[in-house]
Amino acid sequence: MVSKEKVTSKSQVSTYKPASKELATTTDLSSEAVQEITKALNPLIADAFALYVKTKNFHWHLSGSHFRDYHLLFDEQADQIFGDTDTLAERVRRVGGTTIRSISHISQLQTIEDDNNEFVPPGEMAQRLMADNQLLVVAQKAAHEVCNKNNDYATASELETIIDNTERRKWFLFEIIQGLDNTK
Ligand SMILES: [Fe+2]
Image 1 (cartoon, rainbow, N blue to C red):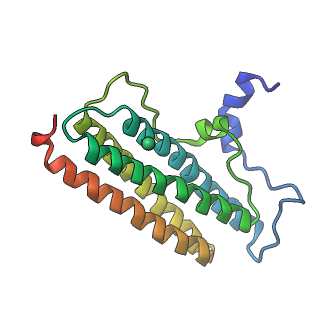
Image 2 (tube, rainbow, N blue to C red):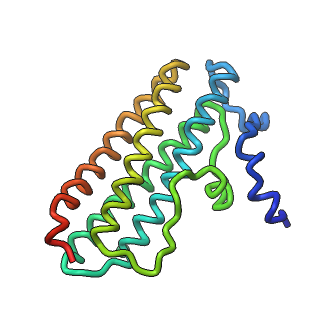
């Protein structure tokens, strides 16, 4: 059994480990490029998992007069975020890196904070998700630059769709926030 201290050690996060030979997918990219791309993408995947759970949390613990609208919207957004995790994780594997392995691995890499509040008002949910999606899109754009720099066109292309997905979520949340005076 792995000790708690070992699982949560920050030194594990900053240490890049090349894939074992069985997992080192053949690629024309240099090992430095694989390392840079992997380091850029894995935190995005961890943050997407964190945001997926938070969005589902709000989907489940919603209250108020806009229940149906927000409940369905948060579910739709969560599905999209979850789908993006697989796209990015498989890109990491296609270029020969290794990716997320566990909840503890997610917790090491995530920058989006968990939300364990007992009750969050619906308008506040929209604001918190908006802020998280904003953090995420900035990181996604930074990762896109890393991919471009290393001529990883396919990951850059996937990220363009994922960035658009994030900006769509932000758009919906932004407009909800415009109507917060009507939200109880
Ligand atoms: Fe549901």
